[in-house]
Image (cartoon, rainbow, N blue to C red; front, side, top):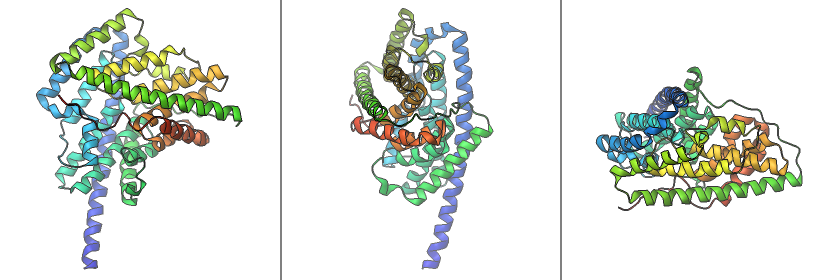
Amino acid sequence: MMLTKCPNQLKQNFRLFFITTLSGLISGMLVSSFLYCLNLVTEARNENSYFIYGLPLVGLIIPSIYKLVHAKAVRGFKLILEEVQQPEQFVSWVMTPLIYITSLLSHLVGASVGRESAALQMSASSADKLAYWFGLSNHERNLVLRTGLSGGFAAALGAPWAGMFFGLEVLHTTQLKKWTPKLFFFCFISSITAWSISVLLKAPHFEILTIEPPDFSSQLLFHLLILALFIGLISRFYTEALRQTEFIFHKIPEIWRGGLGGFLVLVLYLIFPLSLYQGLGLESILSAFTLPPSYEIPLIKICLTILAIAIGFKGGDFIPLVFIGSTIASALAHHWQEPISFFAALGFVSLFGAASKTPLTCGILACELFGWRISTYAFLLTYASYATAGPFGIYSLEKYKD
């Protein structure tokens, strides 16, 4: 009996290895092409400022596309996480082209959204399609969906180790007993494959910066703990404000929600000089490592991002949270006369870690992007921010009642 069981187990593991490798390959190609298209769309918007007048139109188009093609898919990444947590129904493959197209449209008109949600949805829905084709069980589906998340995160950010841990950590931050060696292995395979493909295709990732930590002092530790408290409170505010704003917009009929919201954002862009906050805002993130911004910059970004996501524009929270975290940390570092680049790097990862409840992932991400010498401080900040951010995050599975 044992002899019969071993070949079956070996066959099952080989099949999972093949599926996760193929999933990583697909994720790497999909995400790389998306990042290239996103760059082209951003350049087009920067060269044609009048594109922002399309905000109300795109706000109307996005929900109409989802309603026409697959209404349930509008829930996006939370729909993926529900299937990870409790597999019930295979995720439709149409989520991939839907989030691809609607994210590009959102960036074309300057909505203040990110790109990681698109990458994660494309990767996970593709992985689930493979699970469907191969007739996997619910337990195996859970594993393959997680490997899809790992691949998407790694390909989007150029960080294979952080990608592996994202698939492990999301939704199960404190449940380490669920991190089996098998899950570790297959998340790693998908992550390293997707990352390798993205590097091979020269996908546009963040430029890796080597950050040298300052000499340790009690004053530095005090300022880092204050920064962690700030980041945790901002995470709490962002999460609750986003939830309440989504609830308010949810009361508006879906057919008008995006159009009215898009018009509101357009009015704000026209009344105030807000071109700095359109789209990803990568230039502001990079400048925060050398020049401290004014305090209103991250505050305005918070408001515009909450508004854009609540309205229904697609793309995600990661880059906006990186923008907010790095700029607020840079401003505080200047005020405290601490190294600006060092604090900006810690703010870069800690706000998303607190808001997404993935502190380990973001600590590792800091090491991959800024060098392993920053590791002690990175893990201190991500976990301290996570501890002060409260129990709810941007990936909390909540459903609104009509």
